[in-house]
Length: 184
Image (cartoon, rainbow, N blue to C red; front, top):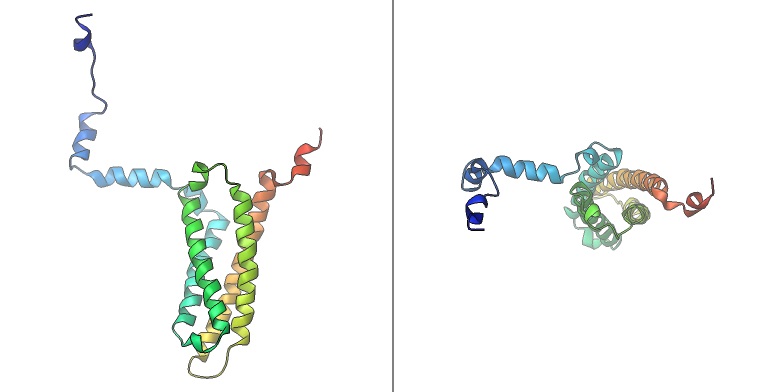
């Protein structure tokens, strides 16, 4: 029992790892930690490409409207609310999926949440597109409003595509209880 402390080593890492923590090339370790936390297969999927398109085109849509005096027409308040809110939530959802937050919260039915989100945003963006297109008038900002209506239509189609792929994911994930209870 007297020789116990001499046989035990308390070193938990190698000296190379200690030197990087003390100021060596610590960015290499940081890059591997960030990339290991990201779901790279998601980035190559059609739903991710659609989400990136929704983020980029949605930003373009609401920035076109925001660069005008949109407060003069009440319909553009609704258009801006839908565009900015859906843009922010889509950006948040994209990073949630990219960094695997859904794996850390398994009690949330993510496939159902994503499907309902995209279905609701598709309907809301359709109403925003209709309000945007109906409120285009001739004047100094005609080009902004007309381009905003075009991009609202494109973003609506992208959200519809995301809703379709989310539905397929939900259906394939056991969303249909009747299919799971049929005896074989």
